[in-house]
Length: 215
Image (cartoon, rainbow, N blue to C red):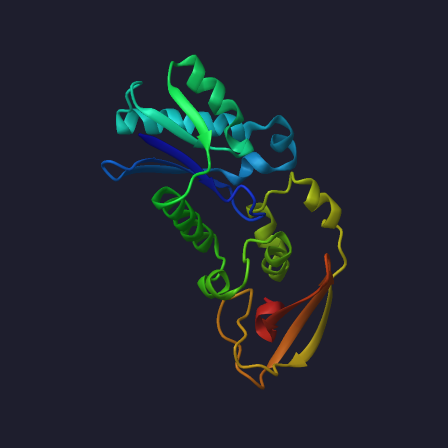
């Protein structure tokens, strides 16, 4: 049996991880759809759906998938074109809820990928729903000029907040558990900081080392 799942399609930051898994032998293949396919121009063309087909085709060759093997694919919209490709190439497939080992692997690989993009490990592990759109806006706005290119800017939800006003003021850190969302390092309680404030779904605050904001 072959299982196909995705992770990151709902994350504003980064592309999307596509994973192909054979549970009987614990063989696994994954690839990332480049975030460039989610910019304003490419997103309209849905080129990311073509990328899914390319990745799965490469995975099937690498894993030597036979047409006698049953293929399970996630019910998500990411596999819209893949379903047609599977039909055209004579594979036996069906849509289902994907869970278990394949889901764990794909989600873990996407998390590692976002960490390589610069999202702090502590933010991903200790923030509730770290891939929520408005939570990720905090990380993006902490270093906007360098991070916006890492985002799915073709999304309509981004168009709504693209011109959002951001305010910055000086303060002193009152807490002992906060990390700077620009450098990812701990902010010492009592140290001078910059606080970036913006309002999207609610009021948000981004805490930065003073020197990080000035860089």
